[in-house]
Length: 238
Image (cartoon, rainbow, N blue to C red; front, side, top):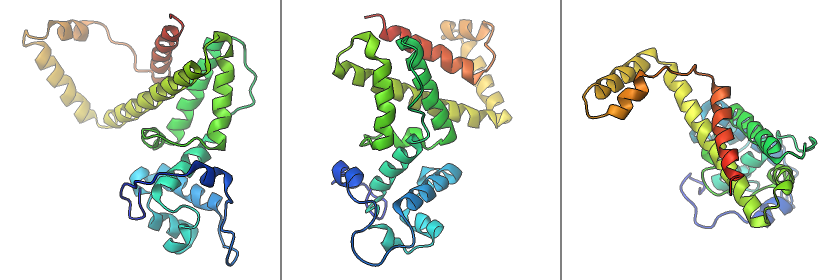
């Protein structure tokens, strides 16, 4: 994103972002830090969604002028990189592995889901390519270690991690959308009436059979675990 929120063409230089200084080398000592800017942006996204995160709103939160923020995050794209890596620091990386790669990979996925539920903007932020920062790489190291017993080569391990993360992000996005719908009983009832009408028209026998079958209790944890098991079982059936 450019400074005005549009799409940028240059992208983020990961070496400059993650290995360069966290504050400007020259000029007066600033009254705030890159960490404070990132925390303000995360708090804003948590409260109001990703669209609310603008350089102006973040500057207001840290009590700074908009232009002064550009020394730390020259555009919104960079700010999103900082935000994603900042919240990734909440993921534990020191827990011992069991040696059962399926169990360890399930743990990785559950930790990712918990993080995304705490920060509902994260699945959308991950939908475009992000440059892994230090916290993200630390968690990736844990996931790669979990996959060591599989004997997969390096490229395959990275593919598995990417597939797992994509699954979790997609599932959480759907989960959040469903929760939003559930908060409107009239909308739920309207959708149920529509599906019942479509199932009764004689052209959708499979749908009619599904709707006639006993439904499962809506348990988000159990649903996620069931879908995750199918994914992980598939990874092991080469």
